[in-house]
Image 1 (cartoon, rainbow, N blue to C red):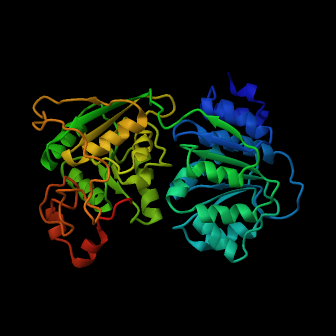
Image 2 (image 1 turned 180 degrees about the vertical axis):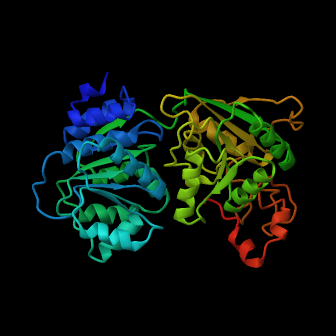
Image 3 (image 1 turned 90 degrees about the horizontal axis):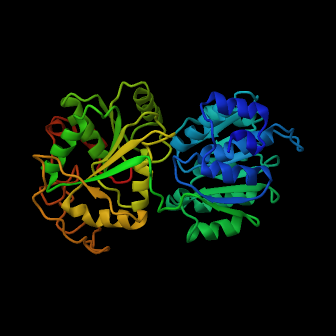
Length: 438
């Protein structure tokens, strides 16, 4: 099947071809005709499957027809959980809408209010927003939904996890009742199903990328580590591989990302950190440096797991496994994109074996264990600790105390203090808090 068989306008087909796409992905093949027909849609799709184009292309086709309602408010509204994902959607609009005069803009948290106020003072066709900031503008009477025809909920499961669902309900309630709604989520079960029942009208369900999807283009490897020192030795070996062009190394904490990036820089790797304590301009500058090839190793927390789209990433390395198994799927999806192949490596310490069990259960596959000569693990792989085996304060058994003194955890910022931190003043040390989920 080609894009021309999807009944898209010639201007959109030219833009798709100019962007280097030849055949639609499975989610595009199934979702685009439904969206073009005006039906509500609930679709299960992981990142990296082409889901952004699956709603951007039908939305741009809709905008080729003049609005039936006079006003300056958006005709298409896309809600995303993060600024990074909003930027990705904006980029897709610019790419596919190059033949059209589309007035598009974003309303996201962490950005100055001035440009957003100017955006809302003028007519806009395509608005991309994070729920919290959009509600802020709505409460001040700055949003006009009288022209809204299409509402898109992108990564609805993530918005639910981040506590945005009440905001989404409020936004949907303010939108016209006869709008079309498209919902995209990694899963269509549980709470997401209930959200869809509230917000969608007789939706078509498309499920092409369930949570058990096997990333065929990504080779997944597991390296078992005995302790923190062993983890670092394995990471050093992996980063010295000549076949590694660029990679993202995921850590559990913001402080861990900062410290590991500094360590790798001292070891001669061009590296940078990316996490939620950085200002948006800092984060965008770091991503641009990565895209231009000035950074080889990006050390990131899960803030970069979704919405980060850097072509040519050869590897993803999980220095720390994520607490949520679903985040593993999103992390490794940063490589092997656009038909390319990639390698995802997870370095798993003894305290993380139960997290590995969660991931294998979710993905429905046993991940292959690899051993590097000279760096073989000496500790036998035991059965994963049962879920819920945590102390009352939420820490794992035998983990390091919260004051950072030595303990059994291999997590950055818990067992080890770097010399760089000792040289920092109180304000700098305050900045590197070990908060998870950056």
